[in-house]
Image (cartoon, rainbow, N blue to C red):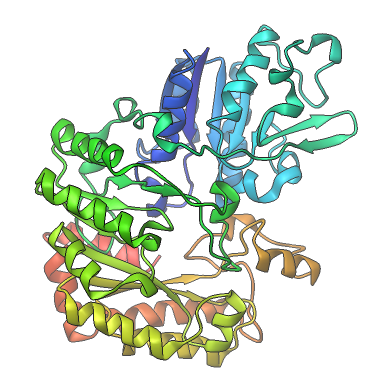
Length: 480
């Protein structure tokens, strides 16, 4: 079958986080290719598409199946694209997956009525099995109802109820099958980078560290209980890792095939296994690819950052780590189910700065639902007090399926939730006694206070500003 994997466009002008290369789609493409399917990847964000451009592309691009990766704040655009697909190719199948379907579960068809099926969690196992059903029906779409028993294939492995992670309609409502995660990650094969315009991603990097950004996913799964995070809904709680040899082949491909000089570790549990990190670093040193790399997306945890490991990471090319600190209030950290010892946090960050020359960044959340104005101010004071080089202040979002979101739903606080505001630079929910406007103003204040200090200002300009355009991009990035 001909299948198109789509990362939808965004109507938000500066949706930088969604403009990076999506290795998740590249792995899914490889799993489909291994089953004999023809696959293309369409990154609407990277191509700068809007609804008009997508409709024009669509007229020239018939596929049997269109699969969209859905983020919560991108629901309106996703619905528009799905309607366009159905209008142009009525018999085409439209499937959805990603963070939003994984979080909302059986409600997905209320939010995305144009979807024929949805997946929760990883789809490398379930999607090929669903395509067996699609093929057995000759491509005919049965929407809004169950596939009649007389039309179902006789082989039990391809019955809808046995397809892992599938969300589908039945006569009695919506059913969800248990998710199944890939245990042997290497078995998927290398991500299908040949389907992606890699040079296009090398030209521009919208981050606080001005380097190329090519992601490397060393593991899947997140065992941590953070109340606000939906990572485990997509990839499960059990950590599964690629072999170091597999990662070296992947990284070497970035270097030799595309001339990349940087890569970024992007998973949630990279530093959880000290021996694994050391093996990874020693392999990099042996390869001598002369590449820099970073853990700038919260891939390391403070309690694993011992001097010996830090030194080895730096020798192997790591120049930047970023840490999820989240709050300056121990009360809020406990509510978030995070480590609440601020004294230990301070000491371990100082150790990183003392032991290495690596750039150190911190992530902070403003406007957590249980937060008071005093808690919010404590977070900003902590960010200013710590020896950080970079900081990101993100506004809390009640992502579907998280523990805090479930609590807020039970309290009746999300009845009029605007899903389009569920991203890091918008507010969708007032905190305790703190208005949305106040939270946004404090976010702007935090960025101004942090980056206007002479040491931080000088280093930020040195590392990131090469032209007036860079200056404009940096200001736009920080003050969205």
